[in-house]
Image (cartoon, rainbow, N blue to C red; front, side, top):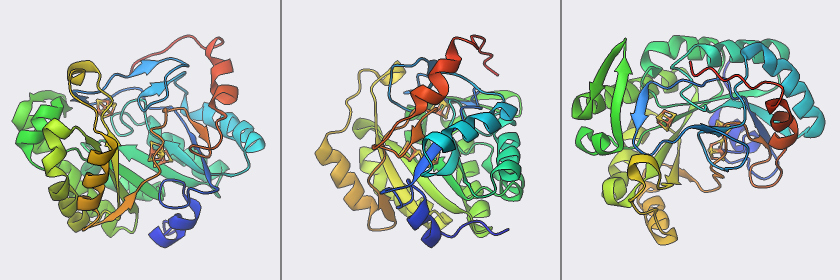
Length: 290
Ligand code: CLF
Ligand code: SF4
């Protein structure tokens, strides 16, 4: 079955233009990550509202029941998304979960978010499982800049650092975007805006990812934490300027809610994550980071 087109997603997907009345459920099945973003602070809690945070990590087969409950509470859910809390292609849990979603809830759109390190190599599986919308986080297309945002990658069992790591990451992201876009899957690119590091580079990123086949672009303001805790978050004006520059090359998504990895509902309007996930926390205390 062909993936939904960008035009279709603009009506039905909350992060591709259909944000007025469509909901999504995030399935937090991907705990592990294969790169080291300098701003990333992945935690398990029920308090913070931001990416990388989840109350729980689910096993793929547990998502069947979770989705059933979520659809009862919020029939507006149109999208089953996997956005962490780690990377969706660092382990096989996300692809396994999408296979389960496809079989049990064929009407839901399947949305995947990745750092792109393994995208090129896993592209055939991503296409085969029927992912409808893919988000790739590309924070720079210049390895010198990327190295300031990312400390390391672990690639085929080997750790690479700095510019060497950045080169591999960027190359795989762009090759992966091209391959998946050619198969007809709609791609959004997210960029974490750190004005002091990639503020002057946004135009270049937008132009490059658009040429590679991405359709829509989302600028996520830095939350100063971890190694970048002393860097400034962008002001509204800086975000606006970055959007204007990027908008010369690609559609801009302006309604991002910086969701938790276990968010449920219509972004910015309703939130059922507490009812769906938090009550499970006390029952399932074990978290295995891998
Ligand atoms: Fe989730 Fe992301 Fe899919 Fe949306 S969120 S995996 S594309 S279904 Fe959306 Fe939330 Fe912003 Fe993400 S508002 S953080 S862009
Ligand atoms: Fe954190 Fe995501 Fe970066 Fe992995 S890819 S280090 S989970 S922000």
